[in-house]
Image 1 (cartoon, rainbow over the protein chains, first blue to last red):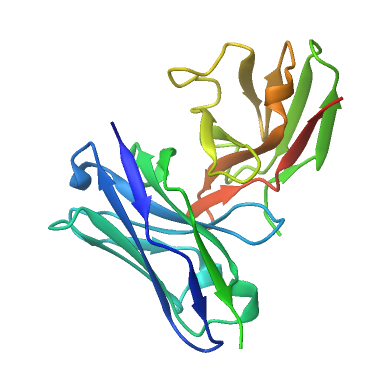
Image 2: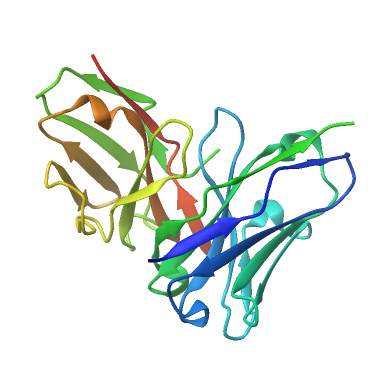
Length: 120
Length: 110
């Protein structure tokens, strides 16, 4: 059974960095790109970027360029999302998701989400 | 604001059919597959349809999709109370070089 298990909720101060993890199981981690998606309270879904676990190649949404880093650790079957220079509007639930069909593909399995609260 | 627009809401009574639209441009819907996600309250999104009209295993055939030009649509027939959720279309955008989600449609079953 494919599972994506994300790390727990975080409370961070403005200007700091948060790092969230997503550990997968039930399939070969390197075979699928991993994506991260943001959902602010009461808002829609916003794509942040992806990583190819095989070579670590990344692609980031323009809105997050310069502040986001997505990595993959094949020894741990885990992908990470790091977001720096946090501000209040970064408070959101962040989802990891597996991509079927490479970077252009659809997101067929999702993590449960990680709530990040940015507050002084 | 997303470059892919959806009507904010749709509603119907049990048993009815409703349609949700997703409007984009030549750089996204016009040249790439559209996928649809269902998000029930308080949980992660779930893949509902992929590649315009394909249903993953376990998704009832009450859900169907289509695409024409720079627009796509999701139809839900035989509406049921458990269909009450937010629905998002998603597509790769060649100009942005990234995925784009539609603005989302909240479906209410009256």
